[in-house]
Amino acid sequence: MKTKLYIFSLIAILFFSNSGFTSSSTEPEVGIEAISINLSDVKSLQRGARNFFNYCAGCHSLQYMRYEQIAEDLNISEEQLLDNLIFTDKTPQDLVTTNMLKEDGDRWFGKAPPDLTLVTRRKNPDYVYQFLKSFYIDNTSPTGVNNLTQDGTSMPHILWLLEEQMTAEDYNRFILDTVTFLEYVGEPIQQKRKSLGVWVISFLVLLLVFSYALYKDIWREVK
Image (tube, rainbow, N blue to C red):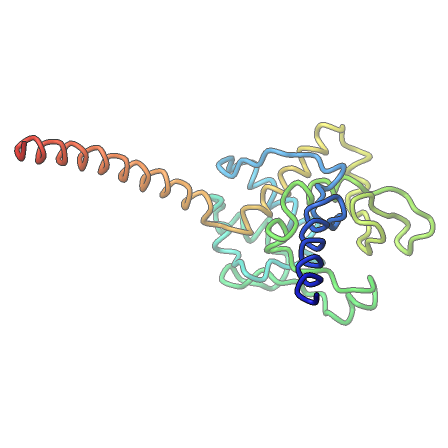
C-alpha cells in the first residue's frame, strides 16, 4: 500500500511540474525591446565609452578593466584617453574604479551603485537598454523618478536633460552606443573569439574533406 501511494505521489509531482502550475520565472520578460549589438562598430564603441565616462563613471566602476586596455581595443590614443576619459588622478595602467565610497553610496542611494563590468552578462543587453529608457516621474520616490523595467530603483534619471534636448532617434542611439560599450566590457575578446572560431571551423571542414578523400582512396586500393 505504501509503495502504491509513493508511486501515485511521484506521478502527481511529475504531472504538475510539467503542467501550467510551473514557476512564472520561466516566462519571458514583458516589454523588453530586442536590440542589435554590433561590436565591430568601433565608432559606436568609442561613443559608448565617451557616454559611460561622462555620465556613469562618477558612480559606477568597471573594476575588471584597465583604461589602457579600453584605449587599445577601441583605437583611442593615450592623449585622447587622458583628455576625454580619465577625469581623476588615475593613470592609463589603473583599473576603472570610482571615487565614491561604498558607505557614501549606501547612505545616498540606499545601496551603493554596482560595478557594471558584467552587467550585460547578468541582465543581457536588451534589459539594460530598456532599463535606461524606462524612467518616469514618480513624486513618491526619493529620487523623484521610478523605472518601468525595475520598479523601486534607487538610481536617479541622470540622462533626463539629454532626453529632453535630443530627438528620440538621437537619444536611442546614445543609449545603444552605451549598451554596446558595456557589452564589449563584459567580454573584451568576444570579437577575437568569434573570428578565431570561424578559422577553426573552416580548418575542421577542410580536414574532413581531405580525410574523406584519403579514406576513399585507401579503400579503393583494398577492393
